[in-house]
Image 1 (cartoon, one colour):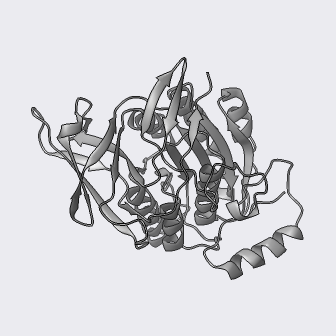
Image 2 (cartoon, one colour):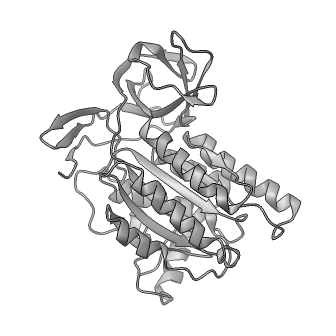
Length: 350
């Protein structure tokens, strides 16, 4: 089964489907599928396959029960005081604005929620020598995260393949990351769009993260950057953390500039961060910082003052102020497209 990367236009989807049917997979791992091709869908999900976000979380036994309100907007926010994480804020320290209009917070959380993670790693020819260090740092990140997190591994070159489906087993993730072929081009945007689709379709956790590691500029995708960002917005997530291994002499100055701008845009638009280490040894430190960032976020929920029938993109701004702090910086997604959602209840595994 091959990867079908979500394309914005129906024509692209139809063409991709015909192409996929005629090809043979390079290995037996299951490729990512776009929601439109998935048959066995969770019946409590919305017709477009979107997994609704949730903010009303209660402890039940050794797990958590999540209740979703159909029109609730949920924002995962990282708050910085200078370069330090601000971890002592309360609900009253936050203000949320949608299209410039102040909103009323209906929920507030600040504790280590389990997360669904997409590990999306460049497997193109230039990554061969870097993958051992990348794989080690990626596993260190998982081990430093919540034990109830789940993750899947996508290795991509000119196509993206799931080498390990959702699991909390570090050994299985290690095996998935070990499938290194280092060949072909770099279909980065398609890999991101398809991985976001899989998170929306199959993830068990409402809070979702995509960790993208690459050493090059996209040169093989059907989607462009704008289409990819729009798709992620339509799915209401995930937060994207990008690690660009753009050192060395493999790329020209313009290529490095373009790659940096693309990775930074993907991360900034979703509330994540983009990192550009100067050498391979810095990846360990970056992985630890990403793990801390994920586990330290605030989760805010509100009902929009606009009707859900207004389908235009809505910009979001979060402002935080706290006694004893200087000027606080809040990272969160820049906005969202309202979509029809179906309430659900899910329990984290015990």
